[in-house]
Image (cartoon, rainbow, N blue to C red; front, side, top):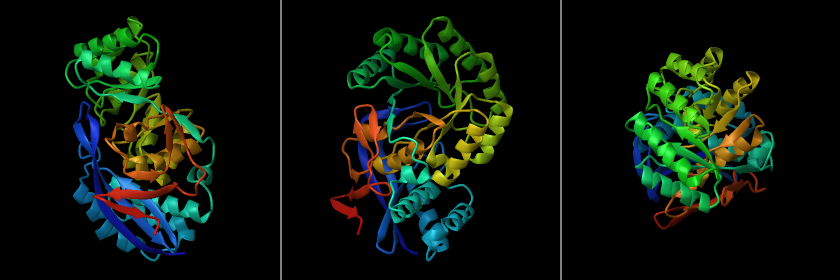
Length: 366
C-alpha cells in the first residue's frame, strides 16, 4: 500500500484565555494539519508554529512539507515504514514540527493497516493518563485564582509558569498559589529558560526552605547552557527537568552523559515525531531517567498522537496534555477523550481521528 497523496491545510482556534510564558503570549491555536492518503486509508498529523522554540512558522511548515518532504515520500510503501522515516528525517535539516506532523500521519496509517490503536502498536503499556493543567504567568492574585479554579475543575497537578520577570516575583507567585490551594494539588514549575543558574539555585532553595513542596522544575536556564543546567541539578534537592535543551536523541545523550538533569520532557514538535521520540525515551530509560511527554499549543490531533506515544511506554511517567482544554471550541472529532484530568485512549485503529473542521468545511477519512 503506497502513499498516494499528502495534503496540508491551516486551522486557527481562539484560546479561552491567553497562554503566557517567559517566552511568548498566545491567544489562538494555529496549526498546519496533514492529511496523508495510502490506498483507502487516511492518516492525520498536526504542526503548530512555535517560532521562539522550534523556529518554524505556518508558512515554513507548509513549505517544508509540500516542497521538500512530500516529493520524497510519494509512492513509498507503508510496509517499508522504516525507510519512510529515514527519508523523512533526512529530507531537510531541522523543521522538526513539519516532520512531526508527517510522522504522526505515517504512524496513523501504519497502525490502521495493522488494525490496532496506535498505543497498542507502539507497546500498549496503558490507555489512561492524568494530565496536569498549566497556570500562565501573571500577577500573583490572578495566578492564585486560576490555580484554585483548575483544582475546582478536577485537576490535581498544576504546571506553573515562571521566569518572566524577577525571581522574587516568581517566589511570591508560588507562595500565593500554595497558600491558596494548600495541599490540594502538586505544583510543577516551568521557567522556560527564564532564569540564570544562580537565580535558579537561589529561588529553588528558597522554595525548598519554605516548604512550598515543588514536584519538579522544568528548564530553569537557557537551553544551550548545559553546564548551568547541571549546576542547578547538582545544587538543589528538587528534581530538574530538561525541556528545550533536548530536541534530538543526540541532545538527550549529551544531557544523560553529563547528568545535567534528573528528567527529560519529550515533545513531538521538538523531536520531529514519534520515531525519534522513541529513541530519546529508550536512551533515558537505559540511564534510569524518567520522562514526561508534553506539547505545544495543539489541538486534539497532535495531543492524541503524543498521548498514544506516552501511553505506550512504561518509562514515561508524567503527562502535560492540557492544550485542547484551553481552546475556545473543539474542531476535531475523535481521538483522546477527556474526563476532567483523566485522558482515555479509544480502541479505534490508529489515532482514532475522524474529522477536522476548517472554516465551515469538514475534512475527514475520505
